Image (cartoon, rainbow, N blue to C red; front, top):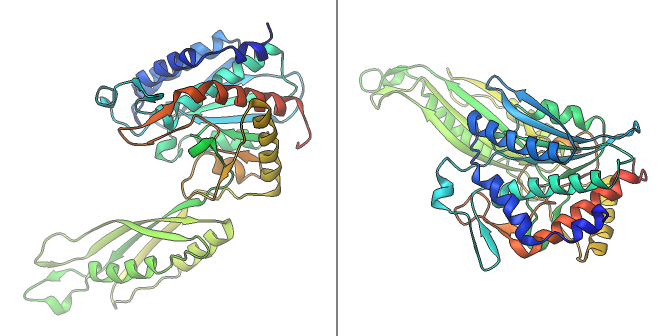
Length: 385
């Protein structure tokens, strides 16, 4: 039996059993012990399928980044598949949101975002390799810190992107199974105002309030939001002062920004860095940068999307795309290297980051066949390389 026919015979309950095993191992951010336990499970499963596995410790805490490869004898650029196995849920959530199936929905923390997508990607890749060695290498990178920004994994993602022909991201599919073809870039602004402290009662006039200055800057930052071009800023945290009877010497804020294009981001950061104090005697310290560069919908992305649509039609459904989304993913990193990237290729469901998070059980075999077909198409066809 060929792997193609074998994958067509895989039933939903078989896929559910595998996903259940992944979800049962809770993997909150920074919990190295639990992240390691999960990485060992994924490594074992990949090796059983005959795939090559390297575990790369990232950061001072040595969080395990798992690189799984279906190697090729050809020196072609790879098909790079990205998934993360960390979740936002603290330990114990699996007891509150018990793994269960109700009305075609499998509930559990991290089911939708995104252990189901990572599991499907591994199974599709394993089936591909069983068929025969691909014409170009196929790699799956299981990332341990995506929910905290992939700061530790970014260097490795970008290194693999430099030698990738395509990137597929197994983040959750959107409503109706639609995929993602563009994402805003995400960034941060850190600002500290440094004033002059004084007694709020006896020497009020001698003080220069850092909090007062920061209030002006909050309004200036929020005013840079431009819905027409898709730029948003949100001051998310403010800290400052010591006591109510002291004119505050220091105050700081952190702002999130989202932009559609790299040019928008660079223009925004230039405007932020040009901000000056409103209050005499107060100094500003400003830092601004991208967390994730924009994932722009290029002609190459459009071509890859059309290719995926053809595979989906053969699989048995019509693949749609959602409009530009404001949330980032590891696909932002690959797209920034002009690697044609498709995102949101994982499981269908809803409720990411909530206690009603779930996947749609009946769609799992279809999603598995689609991922396998797409990997197969890209691994043997050099048309877009």
